[in-house]
Length: 488
Ligand code: NAD
Image (tube, rainbow, N blue to C red):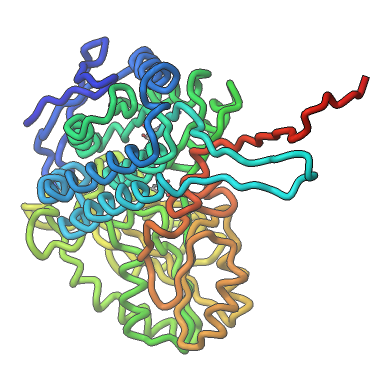
């Protein structure tokens, strides 16, 4: 058990109230840490630190090369401690170690990507009348409030911090109150890498109060939020206080579409991986499986046969493929959707309950669950469950598949399985989603833009697109004439 403090203005501090929160391993309930439970006042002080570092500190004068070097240094520091980070991530949020290892490597790569991009930020000159010179300067947007969820705790830190720092912003980042540990360990590396005080502040605490202050404060220039759509809407409302810039990465109910001409075994694997990786606690999870009628029964049977290979257990146990859900309350929410699915008349073909076994009794485990014959109007086909629950919906033809796929308030991700590349691309072009796959599901890259259509969010993270959210654009117009304009 470790007692943590939070990292504000280059110092390790407690919450002003002295309050702390217990952090427990979701696989067995073991107390693993206590962290400060900050309030609105703590958040306001952290914002002041970020404000001072941006307005008065040396950060504004730091050149892009130095910002890039800091990010490279941080990437290297993470890699040196990859094992520590991966194990801690698994103990805090439950995911299997192999997935945590992947996330840690990806987080280091993200810092490196934006370290490289820091020196490539540039404006342009335009063809204006000959007696003028006009050019564009790109400048940091200012102080950022960054709020992240619990399903990819370290990776979400990287997605938020790396572009903000590359652009020259300062930031207060609030991890989820459920999974703050790798963010705090990251703060230890940020201190060791000698980022100037106040440039990156890691504030632990709940959304109510601390998170609200980041979204509301008029001293914050930009809020970047990843989380649920309901919370995203509140953040958007709060951000109107000073019309701050805003980016939102929200939920999804993503269609994974299997045509009869797909490679069958790949589609079975892709459907299961799309739905159950990270316990299904993934915004881009393929939680709606649309299957062409002619192979529908065969595909469902093949999935059900393979599900027992998804070994449940503590994420640190070798061979485990699915860990516990993040919290008891979240498991109850997911279970309530399973009850809803049964009541709605969908056919429960596997899972649907807590697994048996003494070693699993102390954790928030839930069996991988598949509902078949789901109708597009059912709640389990429309609402984000954010757990290991897959809804299978049969479809008749291409047109039918596209219609069902797009019939959602969300538009984050989508997958298509077919060996006919014309069909694959034809369907992808008609899907209203920001992240798409053909004959694969889930792989994405730091180089590529991440974000959703419709109510899955606004703006894009990652890639060259991701830095835009942290940059202002200034036009500079210079007269080349020496005489007065003589207008009056
Ligand atoms: P959540 O919305 O409950 O919380 C997210 C963060 O917001 C947490 O840090 C929380 O403390 C904070 N928060 C809560 N209320 C707030 C308020 N009123 N003002 C400011 N901050 C507040 O989400 P969660 O349960 O942590 O995460 C799951 C959700 O995140 C899912 O809906 C999932 O789809 C989404 N998600 C989206 C992406 C993406 O890239 N689109 C990635 C991961 C997760």
